[in-house]
Amino acid sequence: MRRVAPLVRRIAQGAVRYSQGCCGMGMFYAVRRGRRTGVFSTWKECRAQVDRFPAARFKKFATEDEAWAFVTKSSSPDGSEGKKDTQESQVKASKRLWEPLEDSEDRGTEPSAKLSKQNTEPAPPISRNTFSYMGDSIIVYTDGCCSSNGRRRARAGIGVYWGPSHPLNVGIRLPGRQTNQRAEIHAACKAIEQARAQNISKLVLYTDSMFTINGITSWVPGWKKNGWRTSTGKEVINKEDFMRLEGLTRGMDIQWMHIPGHSGFTGNEEADRLAREGARQSEESGVAQDPGLGSQGCGDLWPPVCAV
Image 1 (cartoon, rainbow, N blue to C red):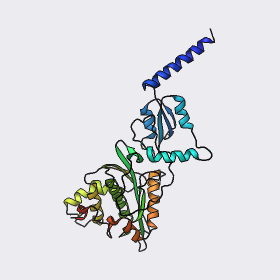
Image 2: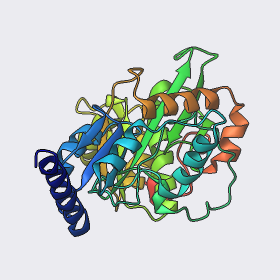
Image 3: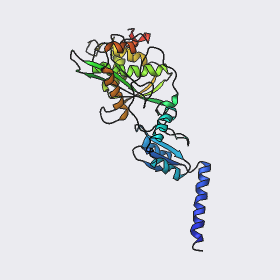
Image 4: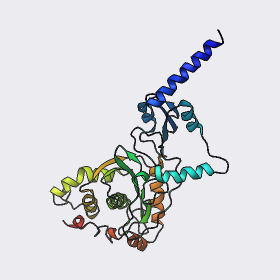
């Protein structure tokens, strides 16, 4: 009898686990990359580990064994599994942070984003599954940089990062006046312009520029009421740049999120890298790749932008 009792208990536990898995009541949430890795019994616990965590990777399973297998899974020595993950990430990448389906998983580790070749033709439609989400808003990181800022030989670039090897990732030279603040503003402009081209109306835009965030969310309304002059009556220095940004945001639902620069956040680091690559290009290439910027950063791709 002593031998039979443990066997009966095991069978009973297996039956309970099977019934919970079949009915969808007792799912297991595996987090391979997040604030804490492991297997969690509720979506609430899982979400706490992956929400807003760069390149989080998680998945829902019917059994605990499968969940732990996902957490501990590693690439094979020949890299075959890593290649498969990279290919699948283009289709399944970064599902929205709602409860994941059993057959969905978030994007894996982030390889370096490649500088996208740009042209003046409209971008082809891109699957919504290739983007990262916060709720129903798509996440994008922008950054601008300028070497020798404020000097004669200043070189500025803009970077926009949508995800690992994403076709919309871009790093280009900033045409016109070469300053860091202009680069930050026009990096945001580029991201919103790309979103519009993809019929994306909801964005979570991460930038390390509080100047850009304060400008578009707080200062621009006052400047417009004051005839694009500051509270002291002086003309806004970056008037044309903010006019372009303000025009592009019309009809968009954008959450402006500040992220500390150079603090190890992958999205910000990749956007910075793209911006630096852009700064190394010739200024003519920046105009050719993004004619909307124009020589002064006041483009013709969005007619109302430059109309006072």
